[in-house]
Length: 338
Image (tube, rainbow, N blue to C red; front, top):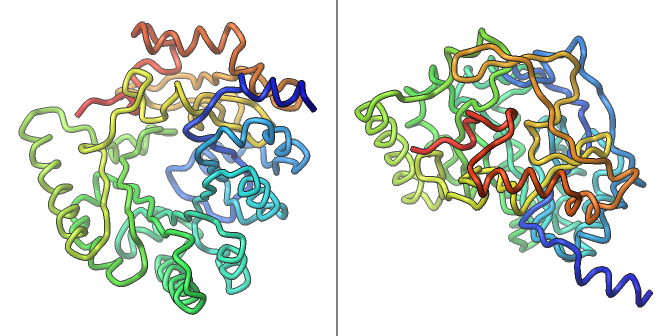
């Protein structure tokens, strides 16, 4: 016991740990690697006993996010993981497609004191359902409103409700409808993002990458316009052209103070560096290239502390400080300066 306490003093402190609790999903979003690589994709649930191997570092982790490339509510032990994170003192959150949010799930979200739940959207009308196949915007919005009603009934503020909004190039014209769509829904924050990982050449035309100053200014003006409209409605709208720059060379994945656990227990810097597919390719800067994973260990065999402190992982983090990135990170849109 004394040794464990002394050891914990030297454990790393994380801003967040993202855990892919499952790589199964009940949707087939056209931009998701799971859909594009469906013929070689590996579906698996992270075993609860493997998740428990995170317990030594959770007390020094500010936020535990239970979501990866799958739908978290498909995991039968999801709320057990929530309980473990809450007991350790973490702020616990998740991201969902919203299709499994029935009354019982809503009540458990509230009773388990989940701090935040984000709903994924990619449009303000029928385009959302076309892009996020297997989901329905109307059902997601009803789930959000049902959650608001249950929170009001119980007199609680948790979970905070966010929207993770993926903006396609073809959807820029409908962006102004977003604040009105979410008005009085109970949503407090919206995070707008662009298509960063492009798993197929067909999706390249949907990438938002303004090339000139005037294009950047026009896009920023649109985004600022919805941000201001959102503020008038009490909704905080965050967008990539006004984002916080983290440590780690400006990588929005905060690789110097965060990490990800894949559904097989692998430890990676971010969700983009360990896809559950074989012989995959993607498009970067308009060119097709082979997908390169970046894995530094597995919590089935080593502690998070040992993996984080090993020579190879320390060297990786050093590349961000030195500005000499490894191939999987070079040119990544998560490093984009706007």
